[in-house]
Picture 1: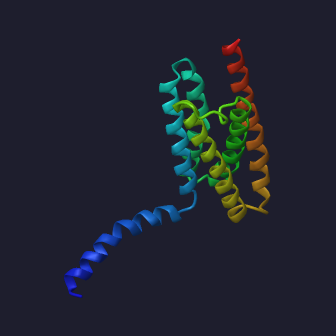
Picture 2: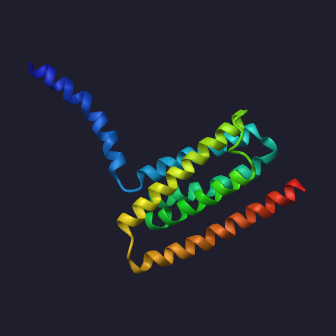
Picture 3: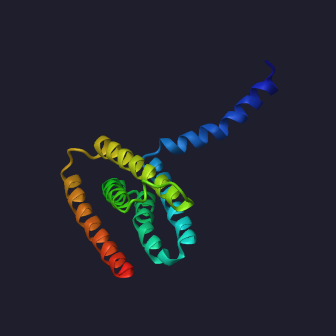
Length: 164
């Protein structure tokens, strides 16, 4: 191989290596999943304009997860992410959104459910790897649980008032 061919291969591999390096940083995979959730909920605001405010409210925790990761507070992101994802998944299942994939709204609901499962798994993996056994981690776990319960309590109450 000539020197130019080697330089060409190295130049082609450099961007791929940079992209892969980004995903090796702690929390980047969770941040990417949060971005996918945000995009799905923004798409739902366009598809269901009568639930515009509800869908905007649903994306707030995912914006918070992004901000927590950006400001290097992964512990809080890893504890809030699974709670929000699991509760949303249960609510979507109970509402029957996951059983019917007849239209684009149902397909987006299925995509958000898949992302919710992935986020739960990835957050639990990171939490166990980086924070399990630390004294402050259980405090964050309990506080996050209370925050998510309050958040979804408000969402359910608000939704119930809109529907009835």
